[in-house]
Amino acid sequence: IITRRLTLSRRLFSSFCLSLVTERFGVAMSMDASWDLRSTVASPRSLCVYTAAAGSQETNPFEVASGAADTPTAQAVVYGSEKGSLHYRTYPSPSSGQGGGSTSSSANAPRPPLGAERRPSPNLPRAYLPVDLAGSSLPGAVVGVVQAKGSPAHRPVFLVMVDDNKGASSGGQYATLLVTLNQGSFSKLPTPPNGMPRISCATYHARCGFVMAGGRKLYCIPPETFMDSSSKRRSRLSPVDFSSVSLPSPGARGGQDALQLISGGKVVVVAVGSSVYAVSGREGEDPTGTSPAPECVRVVGFAQSSQVHPVIVIDIQDPSMEPDWSSLLCANGRECAVIDLQYAQNQISCAPPRNGMVTISSPILAAASSWPWLALLTSDGLISIRSPSCLAVPLKTVEVGTRPNDFFVLRSFDDDAHTVPYLVAGSYSGQAKVLHCEPDTTQDLADRLMRHAIDAFGAEGFPRSELAEALYVSFTATSYVGPEPTDHARNLLRQYLEAILGLADFEGGGATGWPTERNTAGSPKAHAGKTATFHMNSPTSAFADASRQSSAPSAGASTMIEAPPVVTAATPNALVAGTALFCLVCAQLTPSPKASLANRASKACAAKIGVIIEN
Image (cartoon, rainbow, N blue to C red; front, side):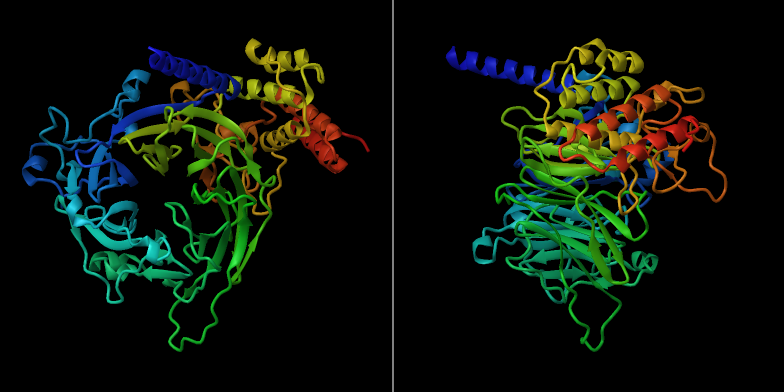
């Protein structure tokens, strides 16, 4: 009885804490589906997600003749288990309307994979049927699965990392092998002439093939080693080689996201000890072998390196950055930062972290980029959605894991070119939850601004009632009491206002906005809840004129990217109120920032609204 009461009390307390988090930050993230990854063998340890192919190579010709043209697209999940088995499962794409995300109850109910239902469709393509590789085929737990994204969709190739219990004698590195999925079965590919190295982490790029790090060395397996002749003809990029690179001591750390390739595959970013380093490769061939080895550039270092939690390096893939710039999310333990990196003229340079290093309340287990958002999975089972322009401010929060949390991996995938990428969170118990970030509503923005203002100034430190009346803030947010005002809270408000007002000036030219709902004519509300594509006037500004947003871009204009304005002249009440709060917080910060920052904000506000200032 005592045990049951304690369990009930913990659940009530957990629900109470979640309600506080929901009320504090607002949950604008939908759970579209829940996938059942459980197998009869063991629990998942690693996974990758990609769009399944149902081409003629994988479909029964009699099924094609029977008329299966309306078969929806599916997402494929390849995951390895702790007992050395490998599994392939497919699930309906969330955008197809069959993912189970219509209601909260159907989204939380685990959906079996295609082909494993009680009554599977008779016209299901062969590429959608489950495939298993027995555990006896691999010498240990599968700790990593990396897909070769340039391989044919009907014959994908994977690099599999296996823990064969020999890591103690090899620096904690894992055995590797190449596996392909063809004609409904897994098969091992022949070992390359130089053999398969023992590694700690790996990734893939079309120019380099598989790039792996083991100890202080980087290894490359070019695509020609495992691609067929048709795939080789598609790639016309000059190869990039990293075999001459020597990493600093103690060598690369392990982790599913400890290695990334950026700048078109020319630069590799890898976690080494308590730091993250970047190094460029050598393009083309070096027949003499006399080219000097490239030097490693330190990107960021963590003050308290956690050996328990992984070092995470994520390429944000921000399309608003300048061509020779890239944006990275680096995290370890409770620390994280967004860093802009430039690669020009064979030189690597790094800008300081945006708004400095950010420390959150719980250790970070995994991260993913769903541009223009970032998703962080923490050890308490919460996924927080944040903007790269103000990483310290959580915009949305949702709970995926219970206590104790068993979700360990976070991946993103594109289901539609015109929507924000989906997120998949996987757990050791074999459950995967599919989430989708939804645009902020006007009420979300108003309530969030009110709560951060109360945290920064106190309930009586600013005209709260006037702000609530101007922005139509809810009664709940207006009645929020908040803790004692601190400089940290004022800095958070400054960063948030810089982002929504478009005042942040990043060296690489990254945009600062994120999608917001705009219930205007010609923009149905039903579609606004999912995503909206906006035209940006320039790659360095996320704020366009309202009259230009509704019109189609002319020929030769900038590209369409999903980074809508947050506060513009179309909402003068929010623009004036936000600028006033920004000037107030600049005056109260200790030490006070430059007066030019407040002056620039005031002039920008006046220019957008149309007020003429006489000198």
